[in-house]
Image (cartoon, rainbow, N blue to C red; front, side, top):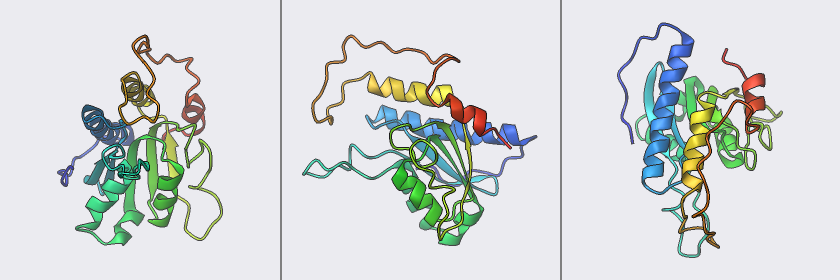
Length: 201
């Protein structure tokens, strides 16, 4: 995983968000290269990457075939907690390629993350709007801010590149020899609504 990055001066917030989302996309590329679902993330505190993660769900499946739960966010949490107190998350932002799932969205709330920036929506398992709204529902832990749609096309293309491959871990593998890698266009329904309702601050 990535170590602390040097402090970088940004000219504006857009430049900062783009820089850190590209770091998350780099982690997604690393996941893809190892045969994992290409989800990557970085945790940023005071302009520095203090933790990073990529999905490790295929490799961490146990012998009974139970799906692994080592999502990118959990690996990044582990890295940060090796050298920082848990309270650091109150002043830390997460950049992740795909909307956090229900499990990760709940953990982010419990860790009291400050803000989550994501690439594309997770319409099957999303915990921050895709299925549930765990980031903002009334509860014991304080809600966290959310911005979606950063490098949405790139995040979708990472996933498409993964799903066009054969997946040896799939319960019933399907032949994918005739599948084509389709590009994302502006009319693509997938997560377009997030871009409209969650603009950058």
